[in-house]
Each structure stands twice: as C-alpha cells, then as structure tokens.
Image (cartoon, rainbow, N blue to C red):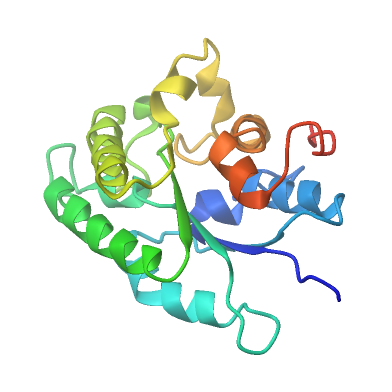
Length: 224
C-alpha cells in the first residue's frame, strides 16, 4: 500500500510569494525544492498573495485548504501562516491610522487560528524588519520596526495561548549586523539573502521537523 505524503499549505503575503528573491524564488519555494529531494518529505503548496493582510488570508484559507487534498476525501495535514506586516502599515503619515489596529489584529488572528486548529496542524512565523529610511512605501504607507514589534508580540501571545508553534523573526534578524543588506531597495521586501536567511532557520526548525517526520540527519543539504 502506497502511503500518500503529508501536505502543507503556506499562507501569507509577498514574503510567502517570494517577491525579491530572483535566485531561489523565496524562502517558501526554497523549502519546497528542498523537500522535493527527499521522497518521504511533505508536499508543499506556497500560497502567498502580494499585499495580503490578515483579513484577506482569513477569507481565503478554507478554499485554499479544501482544494489541495490531491486525493478524494483528503485535505492537507498542516498549515504554515506568515501574515501581519501589511497590517502594521500606517496610511498617509507615520502617525496615521494602521491598515488594521493591533488589538483588532490580535482578535482576528486568534479567531483565525482557533478555526484553523479545528481542522489541521498549524504553525506560525513572525514578522521581518523594514528599512525605515525608505518610507513611505508607494508614497503613502509607513512601515516601522516599532509597529512590527508590537504586532509580532500579539502573534506570539496568541500562539502561546493556543499552544501553536511560533517562530519569531524580527529581533533575530535585527540582531544580524548586516540585516539591512537582507532587504530590497524598497526597504520592505526581502532580497535573495533575506529569503535564504529565513529558509535556513525554517528548514531546521524543530516544530516543522517534528510535524514533517524528518530529522536533521534525514534532510538533504539546504539550498544556498
């Protein structure tokens, strides 16, 4: 009897889409290719949409999940979610209203994750830093690392409350001496180096290894 591989859908914004990584297609695509080298590894579906925020992902996740079972009466075994940076953006000026306030973001994220965990195993990634000197983005959106810190703290607290694996990114990346070289000239999107940095952390993240039933020894050499 052939056992079908586990399936993981990855939901998020341009980071999941891989925007900015012209070499590897983004951290999610790098992980997909990495797992393809191992016949026993899960099948991964990158489902990032540029510009998406929490509300967009909340409105589409069930359709994405239900339509990627591959076999009849099957659905994906896991969901990895990476969302929130677009929700932090202030509109019009640095002290303008956010796309989604931090308390509304926290409430909405909690509702979304509670719903997801009824159906599948869920894991969550944190937010990445921005170059504040390059703001405003698109001449109207102000991102800042202070806002990202506030929103990532909400993600972490919700995940702790719901016992969901969470991998913070913001402070770890900011602690890299050359973290600004991880970003595209627009100051928001990761470049090849930034996506590779996340990929190398993710491919050895214990909650993901445990879910995928892979070990560091079984995993093929990470894509550089």
